[in-house]
Image (tube, rainbow, N blue to C red; front, side):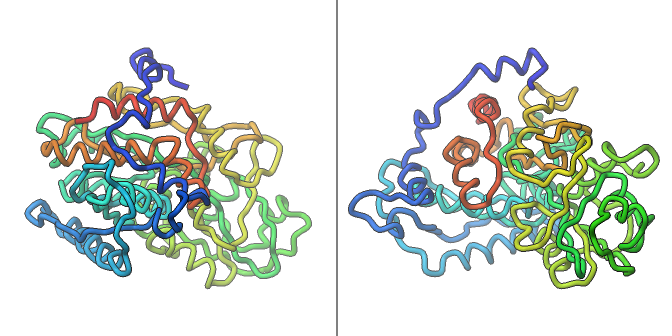
Length: 417
């Protein structure tokens, strides 16, 4: 849904991905989809060339940003080991280094996108540090990275400030590039299936419910043998867009008074915290009588709860997550080229899964370094294209964006410089 007339114009503009000057994607993408060019091995047609990291440390103004830069350098060094020269990327003339940071939830997709893009553009090196959405936005605002990946869009206070990588007086925009359900993961002795609703989750994560045999949980799971043991609920300890989406769901879907805290990157209550998506998954996997929340693509072999939607308990699927996004309007009172989405958490349609996150590529309207802006533009054009979405679906198990959303992102990117 694109309710604003000013934005409806965007949906009528479509720049075909294959018309862009950034060539050579399809060789690599075919390899990701299990195909390769005649006469080449799969390893020849799609690999992950890295050229080394060239970071201008004069750009880094805060200790936190410097820490992210150090992580980018380490990841680049690790990726260089065993890299092979490109088979054929003569169609691409792009050169340079891009640094990004942010969402750990979308890290698997980012690594797949980077591998595909660098194979097609051997003169480009891209580094992505999964520092968390809050850290990624902070680094981008300070000029420490060229783009941010974030599971929550820029706040009004952030938009009111300056962006060091952008031309003074211009702003950054939020462009959806990744859609994934958030799974409620659990590891409870003797329990393989679990039903939850927003009210009960709100009570568990606020500390109002403390044992697995609580009457509210038993009522939702009459056939389960629930232990009379303490619930160990794990949340993200770092500033996290996944947390913001999880708390937004609880705030909207739970009954009044059960979760009054404002949606935030910072988890509002105490309890056990773990850093990053992988930290939460590890804590739930290795603990006893655990529950947590994580991007579903990284839940691994953990059991996941079904959520009450309307009158039914619904398991997460990428398709059900995508349906919620289709039915969600843009956030009100933002610039016409900002595509932040106001997700509908209150749906009663069992075809939709309301505990979903949309990750954004946060980029400048206009970059102070025009050449760097062209690199960012080319990379985000790829990851938000149908081809890039197929790479993410294949390698990270996420839901591809709809053609309408792809077209709207393409229309905004056409104006980025």
